[in-house]
Length: 330
Ligand SMILES: C[S@@+](CC[C@H](N)C(=O)[O-])C[C@H]1O[C@@H](n2cnc3c(N)ncnc32)[C@H](O)[C@@H]1O
Image 1 (spheres, rainbow, N blue to C red):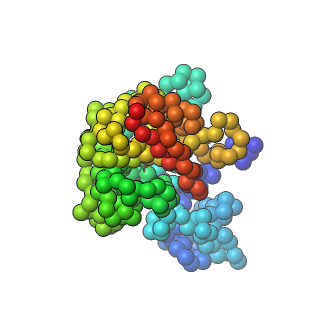
Image 2: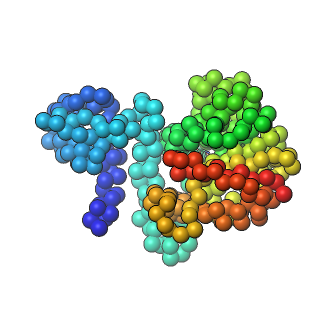
Image 3: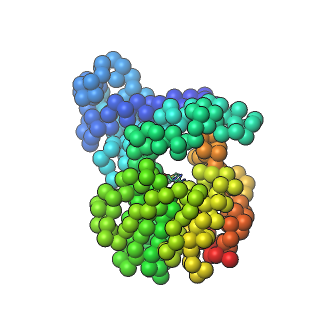
């Protein structure tokens, strides 16, 4: 019980290490608290206490007074493949956590805590905070890294000439799919803020020639022209009514023989231990910050049916925790 109650303090140890640059100060070396403190510009006395807590939590290991990053702690470095540096920073930021302090209120009233605290919606707030928005986009990209390694080979994208990623963020997933399937053209559809980094991502992946960026609002319209629509970690941001609007626009954008490819976690019908606790925490995070939700297979099926689609297949993408849900227009 004490571990659970102290859980948010553990997350702040992660946050402090990231903000102070502890993972970068250690790199792949073993260093004393003095050396880490000098690199971070912090006093040794307090730095040692942070390093000890980080060690107890499994982020570092200590041998004879020298600290080094464990494989887990190394994920907090900004410069390693699979980095979760921005992800850790964004999800421990006070902007993400303020509505959590009113979780009980959200459960009681059903209202979205973020909107009440900030007087605006999450994505409108991001639009007014360019630094936070850029960090959020990087965090989403880092959270998509594992799926990006799995999805291109988990589905036969080769049958399409074009695919559009709706709410595709900085294009990390689309770039991975298009790079793997050389006959495929890609369209990234997102807001101006959401898609801001996509040009650089396409350049890095060598797919700029085959990818375009379309800026717009998926509550107003989704451009037609692609044979398949990919949509990852977007539907869970919204309640059923808003998600139905987005899917309705996707339906109109697709040809009758097109495919909708939803990538989201799928909750089991009962809490039977097959889904990790983080999935249920994500569900509550959607509730307090966006008014959205994670869904069971039956809930996805109902949502898709109500939006003009028939669910045809659900493919788990282990170990990512995500599933690929394929649907066809009705
Ligand atoms: C949770 S992020 C998911 C990003 C990406 N698909 C991924 O999985 O990493 C949701 C995305 O929806 C975009 N978005 C939010 N509201 C939007 C709107 N009204 N129109 C278009 N895109 C929007 C955001 O900019 C963001 O990139």
